[in-house]
Amino acid sequence: MPRRALQYPQAFAQALHVMRTAIRMPEPEGPRHGAAGAETGAGADLRLIVLGDSTAAGVGVAHQSEALTGQLVVRLSERCRVDWRLVAVSGATTSWALRRLRAEDLGQFDLAVIALGVNDVKNGVPQALWARNTREILRILAERNGVRRIYHSAFPPVDRFPLLPEPLRHLLGQRAQRFDAALKDIVQEQPEARFLPLEMDHLDARHMAEDGFHPGAAIYSGWAERVERALAREPLEAGARRRTAS
Image 1 (cartoon, rainbow, N blue to C red):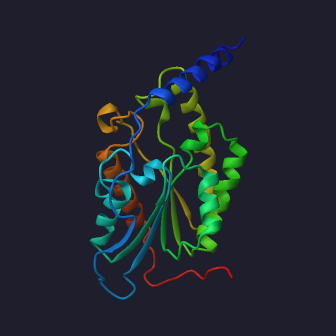
Image 2 (spheres, rainbow, N blue to C red):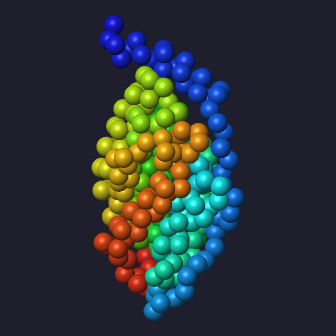
Image 3 (spheres, rainbow, N blue to C red):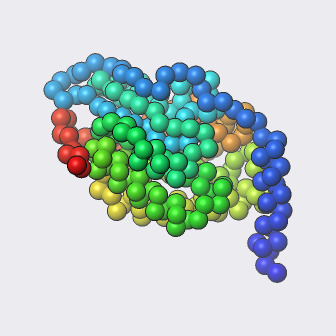
């Protein structure tokens, strides 16, 4: 019997143990929408939506000001007024995000940052279903919500998460890498979408939250910086608004 097949029963038992014993960290306090900064010229307003799971929600820090959205808004508002909204919940999958986008008119936005997929990986969602959901999420954001630039964050290095024991860590890490490779191809299909590498080459337990699974403030800061740098390399044209689908 292949060694990999022998690992599955052990990994399943480990997954159940992690679910029972892992630290349950709450989503951080703080607002989920708002405005910051001031106009610096004609068409300087930027409408931002952050969509995703517990990492988008900021789990791992105490307040939204330390999380991805809060730190990103601070960076972007130094150059323009930012109207922003956070749509995220712990445990969210691509199916949850798709239902939310279809059920509610979230508004019109210029910039979207997505952090989704890890729960699809760990929950055993088939890759084909995840891929269909991801394509539809990108399409709706562009066509219904008028988003002109979508940064879909890469999958994190699950194989280096301190919380996960071996071989569970290795098996989930490999699955996340397969999804990540597919994600790069999917975002290329949508003109508004961009793949955002996380560049966590030096990740260790010191950068993680207490639970050994979620980011700490330093990782969220680096994440926000990468979005800012990507946008600086390829700025959005001021005042240009995409026509929404009827």
